[in-house]
Image (cartoon, rainbow, N blue to C red; front, side):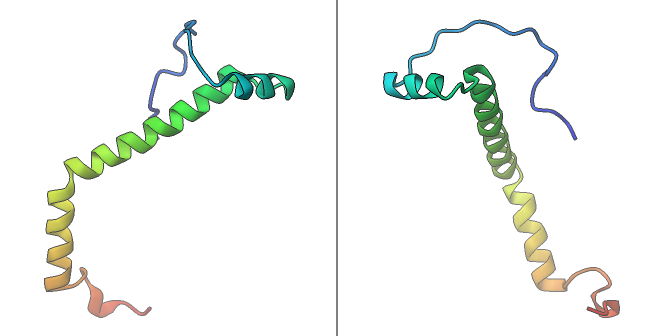
Amino acid sequence: MQTLYDQDAPKQATNLSINSDLLKRGRSMNVDLSATLEKALEAKLAESEAQQWQRENSNAIKAYNDAISEHGCFAEEYRTF
């Protein structure tokens, strides 16, 4: 499976603004903020890329679905389930 990003790229410091109570509670529970942000950002990127792929391929998906509706699945007559 292709990864969304270079996992071996060096870490880079950044400044973020988040809700102060959320930050305080996360720190009190010893939540690894960097790892949590990376996981959330990776999930968001995967979702965005999937939506982009679907938009870019919507014509082909529609054409395929139309062909299946009109002609049925390949070798459907031999299916035993």
